[in-house]
Length: 336
Ligand SMILES: NC(=O)c1ccc[n+]([C@@H]2O[C@H](COP(=O)([O-])OP(=O)(O)OC[C@H]3O[C@@H](n4cnc5c(N)ncnc54)[C@H](OP(=O)(O)O)[C@@H]3O)[C@@H](O)[C@H]2O)c1
Image (tube, rainbow, N blue to C red; front, side, top):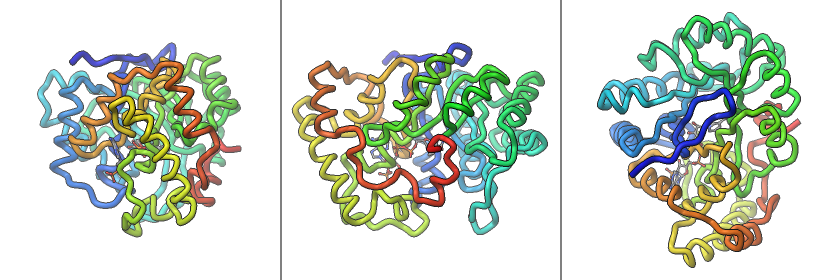
């Protein structure tokens, strides 16, 4: 299979049209199987996926070490094709509690030094602060990444979950390859101001949550028991009546998927792929089976009638519940 590619913005790298988000292999969605996670990264690289996404705070370095091991044990040709996108800035404690964000230049350099060690690489391909630090102007944080680029430790500046004004300020400081932000059939907020801004400035989008953390994958059972440390146990969209409403949307989507002979997850991913060549969905597969399903979306072409049917089944703003709990929404510059 020849992997389709897309380019992250006018200054960013060429990457596979689907990226692999590795977060769930270490954190936030309950237990994961380490050996299967590494096998999934290897299978992705083998299939031509070149973009791997992580955050240094995903289980406090665990996810970076896992990717480091997967890269070390992959065939050299595959390893050399891999591009690693890293988020930094979130502050944790040994109990896993979250205590804000740090975007000061000295902190950026410190975070990068540790990430390079854990990943076992000599550079990070795209480096971004996970959330805007409200106490540090974005120019200072991005300026620190630009200095790391000059020194060869980083290749490209990325952004995460920031709004149009912050995007403009960042882009005025240094070339920005991509904005990483939630985008799916049921999270379409970026279409209003953010996507027009990235398009005007030639910045790509790496879309996360394209399956809304499994909610619109077609595999999420209403009675699924979630561990207390699973993000979904606290996410408004997965609670009670909201969950019932949202899973009804999934059933409407399932009818369209079945008519086309594809899965619900493939339909949801193909919809994001259809939104523009500037958008690269990150899929959060953590098993080879789910990865295989996600990669199948690359072969799904949706024509105008199918796109219209999908949007009728799942209209914009149809989801019940916010995409984050209130306390976490407050950290999203993109929601201001
Ligand atoms: N910048 C940010 O603020 C931010 C925030 C969140 C995530 N991210 C990045 O984006 C990546 C993707 O986000 P996400 O993991 O929330 O996205 P997602 O792809 O919407 O959700 C992944 C979850 O969906 C379920 N799933 C069901 N069918 C699947 C299929 N065919 N393929 C993949 N997953 C399937 C899996 O849950 P089960 O295994 O439980 O079935 C999996 O854990 C993350 O790994 C992370 O790197 C960035």
